[in-house]
Amino acid sequence: MKDLSNQTCPVCESPHLEIFFEMLEMPVYCNLLWPEQQAARSCPKGDIKLAFCPSCGFITNVAFDPAKLGYSQDYENSLHYSPRFQEYAQSLATGLVERHNLYDKDIIEIGCGKGDFLISLCELGNNRGIGFDPSYVPRSEHSPMENQVQFIQDFYSDRYQDYQADWIACRHTLEHVPNPADLLNPLRQAIGDRVSTGIFFEVPNALDTFRNLAVWDIIYEHCCYFASTSLTQAFTSCGFEVSNMKEEFGGQFLCIEAIPVNENVNRTHEQRDQVEALSRDIAAFTTKFNAKVETWKQKLVQISQTGQKVVVWGAGSKGVTFLNILKLQDLIEYAVDLNPRKQGMYVAGTGQKIVPPEFMRDYQPDVVIVVNPLYEQEIRHLLAGWDLNPEFICV
Image 1 (cartoon, helix red, strand yellow):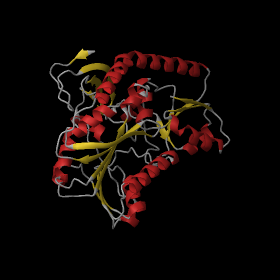
Image 2 (image 1 turned 135 degrees about the vertical axis):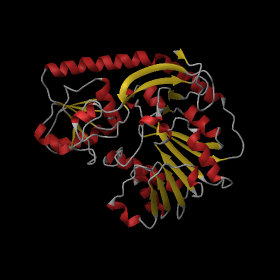
Image 3 (image 1 turned 180 degrees about the vertical axis):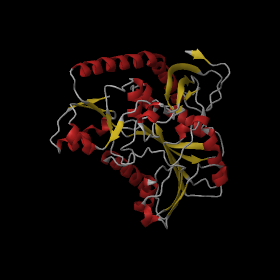
Image 4 (image 1 turned 90 degrees about the vertical axis):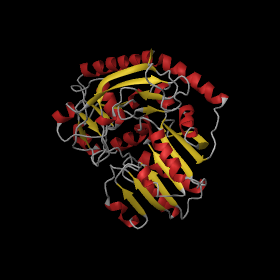
């Protein structure tokens, strides 16, 4: 691993960040799609150089340039069109409402995306909600809640400190912030003395990525990767005490609940042990990554030689990364996605056309590559309804 003497860890300020993995010239957006194939293939690209902090376990892309990104209404990463994901999100919202007694409360969601989760929280508990996200797009199905839920098409920042809430949620946003304190400190300042305010954050689980080799989750948009130890450190250093931490959605997500406090919380021996274990995973990661990519290249060559028709199911970050790492411009013509806002667009970097599931009835693929195995059963069920029984391969 290469030592970075001129950069410190954003979470714990350790001066010993070590580069352990590189992917160069990757699309800067996985979830900004393109209406023309050539524009998709020549999309803006950036380098990924991941560095590990052996002190707190934080992982960051030291080549990340925030100037390359600008989230707008064209940004589309909603997963709520999947029944499997809808079930998870609804179960999560129901559990939070019941466990935290979120009834007739004021709720803020930072990075609310297209607003589905905030709407669920407010419907379930008759709550009032405010969602912040520059990519929010007004939707007709949200109109019945317009008197209870307000959406602000902007990033949450200290300019919104006057907006108070009983409970604050933030899902899949913190990993997009180069320095987590840039979001957590203004949040803590906004809460002030209202120490009964509950906090809930959800981020991708770095252990799933770097220990379980869910390597297609490495994308330019994610400049931060959290395991439980670094996520805990990020919160405690900004004036929060962690009350609950658990893995969700098949271990792919890490959920943290916290409360504001007025004193620092010391790290535990358990956290230090977790950092050491993650350090061992990181040391072996590049070798294992290269082996996984090589295995897939061989598998795809075999498929190509038989002349079979192949599609990738999922045009989100996993699918885009899979296609770009393996440079599958020629072998795979289509990517399938349930999200209608993605259909008819093209995949960043490799240019596959994104088609709806119904397209498969005529195309009749021989092989379906499922980029998230949690969706395999719903895909099988959908295709079986059209008497399609291709070979399924999960990445």
